[in-house]
Amino acid sequence: PLWLFCAGGGGGGQSHVSQVGPAFIVLSLPTSAPVAPRLTLALCSLPVQYLQMKWPLLDVPSSATVKDTRSPSPAHLSNKVPVVQHPHHMHPLTPLITYSNDHFSPGSPPTHLSPEIDPKTGIPRPPHPSELSPYYPLSPGAVGQIPHPLGKHIHSICPSVIVCFHLLHSLVSSRFSPHMVAPAHPGLPTSGIPHPAIVSPIVKQEPAPPSLSPAVSAKSPVTVKKEEEKKPHVKKPLNAFMLYMKEMRAKVVAECTLKESAAINQILGRKWHNLSREEQAKYYELARKERQLHSQLYPTWSARDNYGKKKKRKREKQLSQAQSQQQIQEAEGALASKSKKPCIQYLPPEKPCDSPASSHSSTLDSPATPSTALASPAAPAATHSEQAQPLSLTTKPETRAQLALHSAAFLSAKAAASSSSQMGSQPPLLSRPLPLGTMPAALLTSPPSFPATLHAHQALPMLQAQPLSLVTKSAH
DNA sequence: CTCCCTTTGAAGGGT
DNA sequence: ACCCTTCAAAGGGAG
Image 1 (cartoon, chains in turn yellow, red, brown):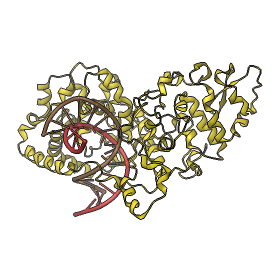
Image 2 (cartoon, helix red, strand yellow):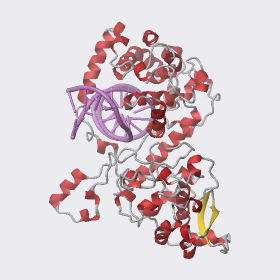
Image 3 (cartoon, chains in turn yellow, brown, orange):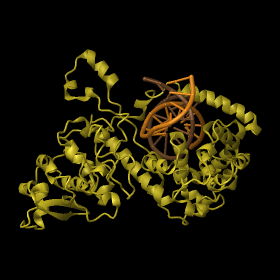
Image 4 (spheres, protein in one colour):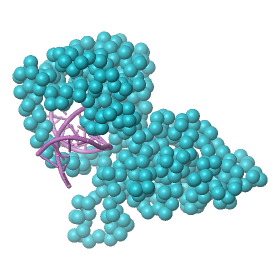
């Protein structure tokens, strides 16, 4: 079996695609090599360490060596190095650093990698390996922080091939090597959607701290404290919307002339609400896996750990915001005019930035349309025209002020509507994948719960087409 | 250089 | 149970 890999790549071998479950494994074989069904099993018995070492022998630059005959996704089909390769100016490992690898021990294979049922959660493994968390490439941090001479080669390999090694290893399951699995690239699309953060989602904020080297383990009581200070910052797992933003940001930026993230995020927020239930479900599912994986990697981690590590003045600022919000609330009439930055500024009409879902958004976004409630499952159902009316795309203070204006009515309604809270708080789509149109009438007609901005956005396509003045007026 | 802005969702703490 | 706050990403803008 070892020879199979050695023969690959530039050696004039013949590429052979062998299927292992839903994934494909690409092998390079001499033309005369017999490809028996049991070949796969033989490969599975390969020591992981060996696979690592032979990995580069697949000879990445030779695109003919690496094939994925399965995925229709362009990203999948692409063997081009740039798809998964990182810019030369950055360390090939750094982009994968998302979380620290504190809890990631090569010697202790995570049980969640078992191919069938996750013994810990009882949740069946996803049918397709590409559904393995792409943003959490099975402890990306581990790879990023463990020097790997082959890192660059690994990253240059077609994601599909990498994924197949996930699977392969899952089958072997005798030893877990982050070196090997980590190459499941963060950019690996799970739904055929190219990941905008393929190359560098995390570089900026999570450069591999040099203190993470194994040398750290030799510590004195004095350094312990310093270590705690320098303790790798384990970030929160991304929620569904964050995952969506990561994926779509590049596209939006490309389509628009805007570059400010605040503006982009507004657009993304709208697009998010314009997504169909099914589309959003993908991200909720992904986020759920993220959290799952995160909790497995960092069992002791708590969101509390990161409190106060970001901004110091935030609370102060928000307090002042709340104050101004009250003022605005008192001066109801001046709501729209007080907006710091009219969002229309971020959302010029006739933009190509309109959601691709805008085709169906005409119905989805219609305030009176019941299916609107389904468009944002995580968020409470929005069915009443009153929500769509009062709010425009607003900056935060304004939004909050308006929210306050209407919250009283909402709250009273909300109290009577337990069903709506079910919708809002539950990890939405997963547990209840109700297709459009199948929502019980009780839910469809239930009053919305709090975050009224959500509902406001659903009226945006209509508002957006109007000049700023109209938008402002509609805010009243 | 640091923080703000802006979005949604998750989580923790307080009431 | 509910509300509030913080943080996750991103990068231009502002101080």
